[in-house]
Structure formats: C-alpha cells, structure tokens
Image 1 (cartoon, rainbow, N blue to C red):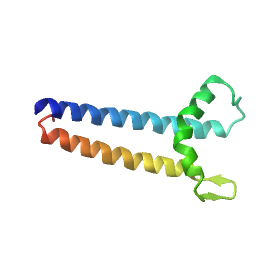
Image 2 (tube, rainbow, N blue to C red):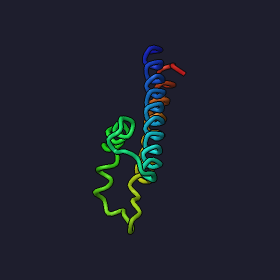
Image 3 (tube, rainbow, N blue to C red):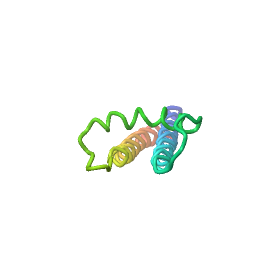
Image 4 (cartoon, helix red, strand yellow):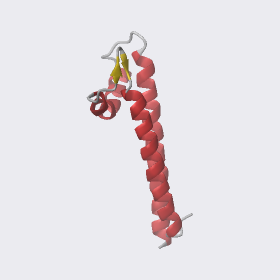
Length: 100
C-alpha cells in the first residue's frame, strides 16, 4: 500500500508542475499578443500550439466585451481550479495509502 501512496504523491507533483507550466505559457501568450511579433517564428508557433487547445473552446463562449477577450482570464481560473482539485484529491489518496 505504501507504493500506491508514493505513486499518488508523484502524480500530484506532476499535475501541479504541468498546470504551472501551462499557466506561464498562457501568460507568455498574452504578453506576446500585445507586441508586434512574427507569428511564424518558432517560439510564437510553440506558444500557439500549446495554448490553443485551452483557449479555442473558451473563445466560442460569449465572454468578449468590445475588443477585450476574457477567455485567457477564464482559462487561468479554470486551470487554477483544476490544479487545486486534482492535487488535493491525489494528495488525500497518497496520505490514505501511506505515502505522505
């Protein structure tokens, strides 16, 4: 049972790390959108490919007010909630199985 606790604790750390990386990539995408950059450059294409699966479904929602697109704000909120819920559940399972 101890092994399951360690596995769940590792999964919690992995989920937290992935969510943190996605958070910073979304932040970088927002900052880059404020400046005139080449949309075909490598780093910009990487940001677009990684963050579009998160942003595109949210952009279909009517959360735009004038020129302001609030889908990144909603993405930050959803990513935060998902991270907190998953990490909490995984850590509780880890403690239950003796991993923490």
